[in-house]
Each structure stands twice: as structure tokens, then as C-alpha cells.
Length: 384
Ligand SMILES: *Cc1c(COP(=O)(O)O)cnc(C)c1O
Picture 1: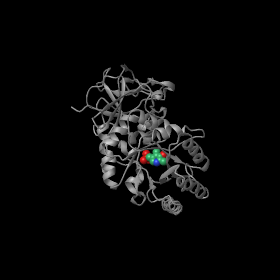
Picture 2: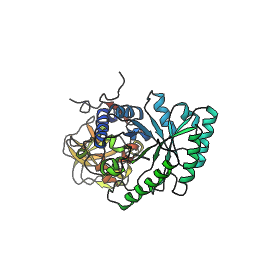
Picture 3: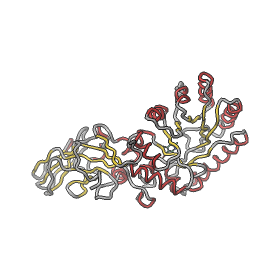
Picture 4: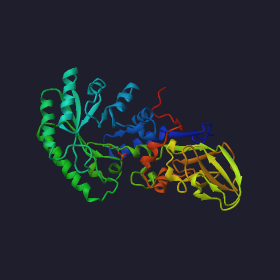
């Protein structure tokens, strides 16, 4: 019996398979044959920042990427020594803490670079910096108009020994649509940005552009390193079956039935009675709701595995609970209901949920939490 098949004793739990995270990382690295930065932002996409990071490193990740500095510092505090990049900083950011913890920081603008250089001067610790080019996503990064100024300022600081530019990078708008014409345009803008930086003397910097979708589908974007997030957790960024890329979903979300009751036909179920029983039936109460990250939009739409079959949630998802109509099937308090998982034991996948509630699996796995207990299984990256 695997750890996942063991009886559930928590009321509700998110089970994370660390061996899957390690194996996915290894499969992705093997696919690209070059260094890989595993993205562990947003609490490791809901899988747990430190355990996910350690599992990815056990699977061969060369570096870790996070959004904010707090995430990077939490990894350092946990003893993670791998190269670390953080990339979303606000004015007044504590760059001294980043320097002390040997965290590489991404810079989008000259004013941010100036703040970083102030911290370098104050602490006497040179920085490792990656310059983010906006090549067409219009989100982070310096536009082509702002790029030459940012590069010139960084090259001056590098010549002065204040920092080393270790990366030149960007992010794609349409990597999940691999034939989209914006991809070629972004690659071209990226190449021009790189050429300009190299001409300015930033010759040591690694180039990276590929998120998960590009790591799977766009070899022209792999450059010196790839930067997958969601695929590390075994989810297919292209919306298909991750098994075709050797990936396996690491997260299983499940809860125990809290109450069952026999009710007659024509009984309205949950707030607003948006569901009514068609005949005499058994209702089962599942003790998780939107406060725990089960989307309210899942009511009457999303499937769960209960009493051996997939069933759609009956009526509205409430803050703390939802209801299932299981007909005449045998279900008892304490029985396990699986919301989503790898999909290999009859349970729905996060992709099925995403389709049902009109979102993406990224949003589901990063938001599930609340009163779910999180449990890690597998041994990858677990300290002795
Ligand atoms: C989140 C993020 C990634 C990883 O994206 P996935 O689609 O999860 O692979 C890579 N780069 C940047 C800049 C990101 O914000």
C-alpha cells in the first residue's frame, strides 16, 4: 500500500508526493539537457515552499526561483544553499538582507538598480543581478526603450566591482500556445536585448526565457537554462495529460465525509437550493469549502471521487462545506472523498477541476489551503 492509499485520518488533507516533484524535475532536466531553475514561488505552488524546493533539488534542479525576497530568505533560513533568484521587488526593498543571504535579485528599472547599489555600498557586499527585459508580455521588465539605460547603468556598476550581472531574462505571453506569432517576436526582441547587453560588457550572464510550457514545447527558447514551475509539480501547462511528458501530479486533495443522511425526492440542497434531489437518495457532507480554497464556482460543476465513482458537487459550495448526492451507493461518515489528484485511481485531476470551474490548475493548487492539513509523502529531499 502506498502512503497515498493509506486511510485518511485528518478531516481534510492535501497530500504532496515529494518523489513526484523530484521525478518531474529530473524528467524536465533530461528533456532539455541543460540547467534548470525550479520555480517554487507561492509556497511551492501550494505544495510547501521548503519541501518542494528540497525535492526539486533532489531531482537535479540547479537553482530555485521565487517571486519575493521573503520566500528566498525563508529558503535560506531552512538551510537551502542552492542558487536562488527573487524577482518582484518594491521601492524600499531590503536588499541588504538579499545580499547577506546570497540571493540573486532581478531588476526591472534603473531606480531599482540604484536602490540595490545603495545597499551594496552600505554593506560592502557585491550583488548578483539579473536584468529582466520586457519583450512583449508588458508585465515585469524593462521595455526596449528603457533597456539601454538599464544595461549601461548595470555595466558601469559591474565595472566598478559593485555587482555581477549573472542573468538576462524575459517571460513569454503565449508559451501555452506554441505556434502563436508573438513567440517569435518575443524571441527576436530578447535576442536584441541580449546582444546589446553583451556589447556593453555583460558577457557572463546566462540567458533564460522558458517557463513550463516553453520547456515542453519550445526548444528555441531554452537558451542557457529553463525555468519551469507548474510542470515541476506534475501539471501540464498545455492542459493535456502530463503523463505524455513523463510528469505526474504531486498533489492530492481529499477529505472525509462528515455526515450522511437519507432524504426524499425534491429536497433542495445547500444555499439557494440550486440543486434538488431527483429521487430518494443519500446526501454526504464534505467538510471543506471556499475558505479552504475549494472554489465557490465548483458548485454543480466540479467532480469528486466518492463511493467509487466521480460525482458532481450538489448545489453551492459554502464557506466550510459542500454536499454530494450519492444515490443509493454506500457511503458512511469517515469515508474518503478525493477532490483532485494524479487521476490514476479514478479521481478527477486538477485539470478537470480547472475546466469545470473555468480557471487554470495553477489557481487551484496555489489557493487550496485554509483548514486542510498538508502532509508530505515520499522521501525526495527529506533530511535524515
Ligand atoms: C511563475 C513564473 C515562471 C514559471 O511559470 P510556469 O508556467 O509555472 O512554468 C517562470 N518565470 C516567471 C517570470 C514566472 O513568474
